[in-house]
Image 1: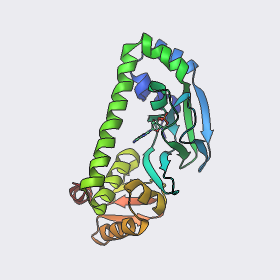
Image 2: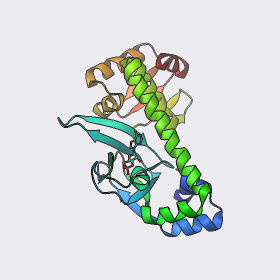
Image 3: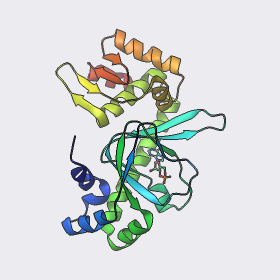
Length: 227
Ligand code: CMP
């Protein structure tokens, strides 16, 4: 596990700063610890902070009026969230829940606004992170329209592998820590359909399934199926 300070200095906000700037910004950081399953905030809440994940995994979800959940993303160390209500001061656009025990750095929006006006390089880094999020959201939307469920499952697994994958002799071990229900919410399909796709990939020898984790054996074939 990387040291929390290193994780923070590699986050988009801090990347642009020299040591003195990073120290000044870090002075306003508040440490937040969450236990697995704990909610940090809910969609619709007023938001006055941005968070950088130091350790653990956070899921961002939206709930439909009938109670169904859509999992927008699962974020890991070095990634940030809670910036939309910084640039556009309105309620939180999603709920944030800890998938595993997690440690976060919280930065007050008021404090950050001061940095954004005084340091265009910091603002550029944050804008880049925002642009990347929009690109990804566009890809996800296009996949919902153009790609079948097995293709979306393959893509979701590769996306989780990019974040949480660990190279091992047998393959790429991905401890995603998601239940089957959460995987289905991430793909935007029923649990049965997602399970069927996973079982099919396993039968073809592309991966091995275990609880809350998957061992990817044939990344190439999985990537081809994701296209
Ligand atoms: P905010 O609206 O302040 O609080 C919820 C956060 O979830 C939001 O800021 C973003 O940081 C994050 N978020 C919202 N939509 C997405 C998305 N589609 N993909 C990844 N993160 C998102």
